[in-house]
Picture 1 (tube, rainbow, N blue to C red):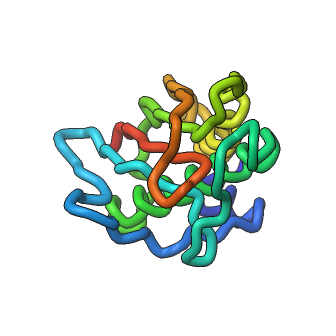
Picture 2: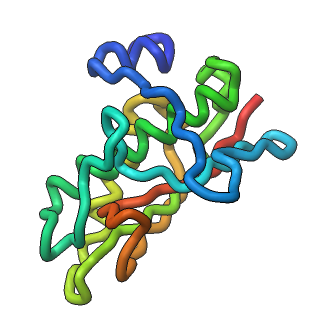
Picture 3: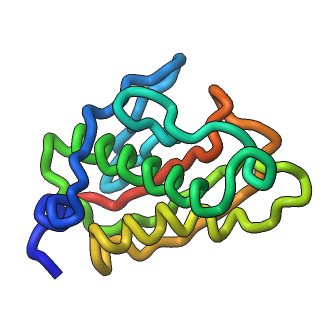
Length: 155
């Protein structure tokens, strides 16, 4: 595995976007003690919502995994902003909470959120191994297919 988070991102041709500003009355992240809480991130790409609709109706599992991966990229972008550009300050991703907009009979939310879990683990190594929730929702803001928030231990 390559030495730094940034070099691992570069090896996968992932360029972190500018961290998104909040869309309402909340902070994009909060640091308390050694914990960084990152607000829910949507599957934004090039400034636009990339994956919309309900899993099991409008979006298949593979596209849902791509949405989750985009959420993870945006989580890393928020972490980079919160940590003054230094992702090496991440000690461990403690937990990801994944919310999947799903039609009622869809039961593969866990497979969708694997898109984020796999990317975080690949980019952060052992520090990216985390606890997780994958929950189905009736709908999400802006008709997003996926939203993910994170709790990260930092130094």
